[in-house]
Image (cartoon, rainbow, N blue to C red; front, side, top):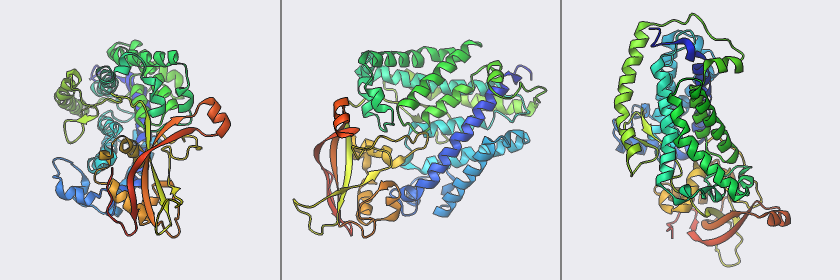
Length: 480
């Protein structure tokens, strides 16, 4: 078993599993804090309604067996507890069967939430966590030599994440080919962060260097992951640096963090021994049954890789798609097209029982998405604010709000506490509003002179009314 389970990847496994445990912890905390108003029994897209019309084979989940808000919360708390144990290192010192049980439970819980999460969980980093979490089950605890085939499966996953994103850019928006996409992206990305305005104001020549560096990393450097050391380490380090650059310039939940964590799995153990306050492990066990199990897993992963590879080679490449309901081998990609102007939906309320031209409307403020022009974009990644993200898509097309936007507006009008908890500030919280409406604006970062004169981070221009005033109790409305 020496060649099948070499000890040289032990520290890379340690770095990967600790990082993955952190991502799991963030994911379960985010689910616990947001699920009731989004997916709960009285949520905008209730899980009970979804599982009533969706068969188990299409969305495997423990919630098909039983669902209640209390059970969902208990599942999140279980995930938080197990992720914490893994993060502090207790799980890696346990027997191998305990390791498998803990990481399999984490995977099953996260997959169960993902498969009933509907539109709120329709992001690439959700399926990426599911696939990485499945592989973690089979890397083994600290006293067992890491299976070579699983460590290479991590590289194969990282390759698909990066190469898929690179291909979808080349096949997508022309601005990726003429190197101008970053003239727009930092301003129009879904969730800007405190440094996005500074990145946006970089010279155009530097933006072109950024795009070119991105192409080289995603389309050329990634092949180095399959080369011998130290080439694989150099490739992984370049990917980690680019992911750090993305974390500095935007809020992409845990996508960049998890991608960097995957890259840790490709680092040379000698480098990690120098960086980490631990020595190279020795005398690692190599149980034959575990080697046979990982071989069987590898055969299954090879078979399941057919559709993702076919998708990579297709001119009609899909982004962030799964080809099996367990999300074991997926396809990835992001920003095949880049919006050239930023639009935002702004919700307003009034306590005027008969709104007219002189009515004063006060704005709702989201936790992160731009609304107040004087507020600096906050940093919240790697945490994920699902409502804020979906509102970016709604501003592009109200069709993205199908099934949940109408209930959202009606619950704002009804002053629903759960819905209010998703927001940073709500007008008329005590008595509730008389009416709520939504208006569409065009946003852009202020220039240096505008920022100096007004103190504002954003300048906005009114476009049109998106949703007519909705009263409480709820009345019908129509998006325009």
